[in-house]
Image (cartoon, rainbow, N blue to C red; front, side):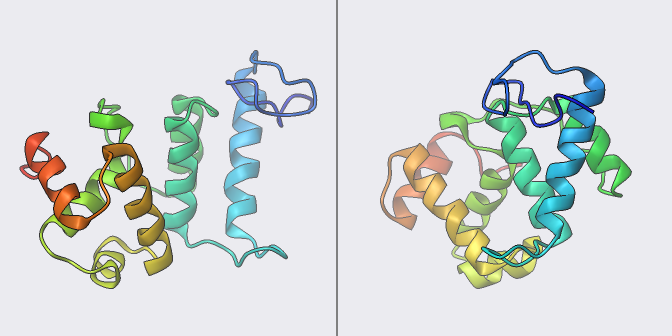
Length: 153
């Protein structure tokens, strides 16, 4: 099938087109998910949750259509995604989950265990949170979470 490597933001290949059919989008998203689950020379296979989070990040970044990703994740046995809610500073839902836990004093290792992620993945989320929130420390991230009413959900 042609076009399954194209992305809705034009970042795909080989044409760089932003017009991606639903069928091509489904095949492309499924291909991405499957590739994330496989061992690669540059990285080990991701867990189910890590692959789902990575696919969700591609949606948040506008590369993959949300409906297409939801269909692929549903077919792979993941729970129904949470509704698309705009978060402060462009935080993803997973980043908000991580932020809530680190704001409550959890370590990366504890957050990883609670969310079913690797500590390295949590560390990447923390780095992204800091960059998006414009902070450099956990207390700064906690203050950001408090100011944006992110701790009560």
